[in-house]
Length: 560
Ligand code: PEP
Ligand code: MG
Image (tube, rainbow, N blue to C red; front, side, top):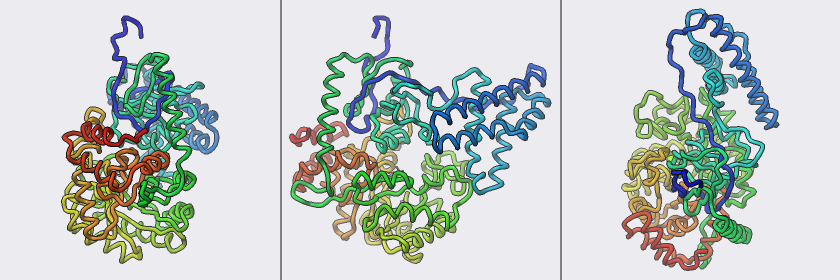
């Protein structure tokens, strides 16, 4: 770093995984704001000319990206380019510029009308309506002389620095070129963090000071310590690479089912959200699926999917897990995962709104259809399918869901414990369900009243905190008392040492991004059940997340 550079040389955030990577920064442009309707100062013809030029440039940009990406991405991007060139859209833009609108506003408003029309058509076209927003933002950025939104193009590998990644950004991310991800916003359960875990990409999220990084800066991204170092010294780089090699060697030696050192079985399951991730999880040696996030399949859909369409997708997922458990979560719509057909977009505080099971109960036909599709797909498969409901707050809700699932032909039904009330009432919930599965991401968010997507409060989103661990302990105790299995399916299960603590607190299985399974398996094999319980007792009695982790690290000398 030069003598005049006043930026911090070490920036702190929350690390995902344990690896370390070094490389040059490439920043993702800031999102483009929606234009406001101010009167144009130009002649209508000149505004129309600006609009058509930007739409043509956007189509060309999209096609160029598509050609580089190839495969299905090329088809998707070509379809977007065609939307930008649509003559009906151009006619609408012209009409609006003639009425005095700026090119920016005319493009924005015409696209919105086009979008509503596609939604009205339903089916595949309806599902693609959201893509128009992406085309509009690109055209508006072009008009304003701003860089195109989304992941930037680069022929060379880079460390991507962004505010946070949206699900749409991740679709066009060329993983061969991304050395690491650094975000200024977004906590350890943000989309970026989930993607990083799923794909095994080194990441540090919620590093607010990283907003000072510039294209071309060389950074060392150290996930284990949650730091981003600007212009690292060569010895730091050598040390980090050595540690990464050691971790890789441990990972390569780990195989088979999850067990503690005394042979106590802890099934290691995968969190999945698509047919592709199901295939990947099976290839990575997952012993089944502990969380199938079905809402991910329908994020762009404007209408509820049909029973037949759902059953076909579920069959494909189940086909990868013959004789293994697959825990399917019914649609968890709302907050960070809105679904147009379930979510009330007018809520002021959607994380506390009618989301998860609350939304499904209010649209019971959607829930019934999904359970029916799951029962049909289960009947045709050799997987042991179980279902669970998200965002359950009371014992009565748990009873409602499990009764309905049983009525519709699914034998094993349980609930996620991710609202503190459900954990506090676990002794009343347990007798009403076949299993419980703790979602540590939302549980932590609600225990601390700290938005899991917000970088400024990411320091509170830490499942090592005894406030979270004590609730998990209560759920574990209720599970043991009522002989009900207690899984963990939040991101906490992917932290190897924390996974040991969770088993000590009573977790009977762990579900995580499949890329984390090898590390967790290797760590579990170093500790007996007695060790795990001893470490758990140290963690729950600590005062803070940092103290809990340190106490466990100090008492677990075999930790590599
Ligand atoms: C959780 O909240 O911990 C969880 C697993 O669900 P999601 O991350 O999909 O909200
Ligand atoms: Mg959740």
